[in-house]
Length: 250
Ligand SMILES: NC(=O)c1ccc[n+]([C@@H]2O[C@H](COP(=O)([O-])OP(=O)(O)OC[C@H]3O[C@@H](n4cnc5c(N)ncnc54)[C@H](OP(=O)(O)O)[C@@H]3O)[C@@H](O)[C@H]2O)c1
Image (cartoon, rainbow, N blue to C red):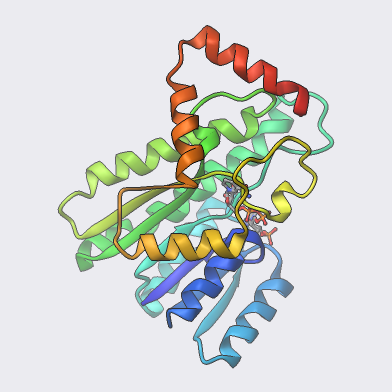
């Protein structure tokens, strides 16, 4: 199995790289920070894994598409995990401005969309493949001061479900992952409560186990997912009242 993971230099992507290395997968590791990627690839190579570091900004969608296709021509990629993402930006005063939301849209939506669609044609032609998008429970409903994060993640969820519909019966599986809180650098400066917080290694191991069955959707942790879905189905005025009550933590 050859697996490509974006955002492999840190957090969940790094933990996924180790989880799949433990399963003997060949790995293609993508992120912007070349040094981290190269030292991870070297570490994995020392334990007998074929690991390739590919420094790339997923916001450069043309480069993503051409690079993934070239990599796939070298050796077919079986599993693509679009994991690269950024959180709510820091140091921007108006969190509803384009300056605030633009970079997160490019990375979390356009970058993920390019990653997930670049190899669709090749995978369909082979009649096999698995596309995975790492989304968030925050895509289930609007949160205060989080347009930069919730909106592209909601778009990513919709993209994954559309791909799932369109790729039915092609042999290519699509999985939408909805994660709760995971202790990674993305949350390092967050001060709001983080119920049911997962360690990245635990999240990655649970994902790798469940992804092996190629399900359409994975929600982790499930209790928080159920509570979030219930909150998202409340009438809008009540939902907004609850969301604004949470605003004091931001
Ligand atoms: N942590 C959570 O609680 C949580 C919850 C739900 C969903 N998620 C999602 O999980 C994914 C991983 O996040 P994380 O928590 O592991 O955060 P993280 O530790 O900050 O890792 C983010 C990864 O994405 C990469 N990345 C960011 N922008 C990129 C770009 N433009 N091009 C290429 N790579 C880029 C980063 O690498 P470089 O900086 O080297 O490029 C890094 O490897 C994200 O999609 C995030 O939204 C996280």
